[in-house]
Image (cartoon, rainbow over all chains, first blue to last red; front, side, top):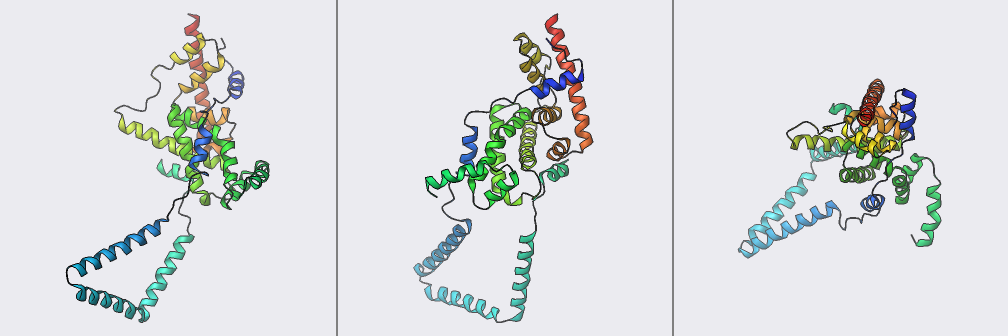
Length: 123
Length: 196
């Protein structure tokens, strides 16, 4: 049995050591989780939009069923007209432009740190 | 894409040596390019995870998780950097997370091998030098195991190891030196144990 007294001997033995075989289905499971992963049937924003539409519909149905259709419709039209009127003001356009600019600026940033940097930060 | 077209394109992807080109192809809507990257590095990533965690199931999960994360964040891959460094770093961080979780859920420190001499000794009885060496590597502390795995078993350079582990290159060299010292001691203990 070798005792690996010299550095060279140990180095040679280490470099000659072969990697163990991974589980037989490792590659298949990785590929299934990545490139063969079925795409989601709906996009997240579609779920949100559908949820909002459903909530609005339920609110209207409840309002109608309670015999308060007229005030509900009045409230709805009131909100819509207020919303439309606010678009006529220059300040609204200004803040929309500021918000849009901020969104574009943030989307250009690369907020993902390099893995090495993350490790360094953690330490 | 039909089957014939896929068969025609497959050799093209296989022939691309440059990982960067494969990443670009994968980002450009060629998932088979990412498949080639998986073929190139799955074994090495699994091996790194296995050496770090010493658990086959967890190593397998980490390998899968690392490639999944890489696939999802291909757009954050920095042009000019090495894919191998990137995927190793992702896998190593996943290992660190699991080690930290183990530590949190157990009362003790990280479970380093209780009896480092026992592994090599048992393997020595079997008369298999490679197994004996592997067992000795497994008996090393985690930081030394990882460095030895990346440098000797996977042939990575100092700078790449430093980037993967997020430590200075000097520390990598120090870890390697100390790892070899400990290895030699463990192997000598094993040899002495058998001779007695």
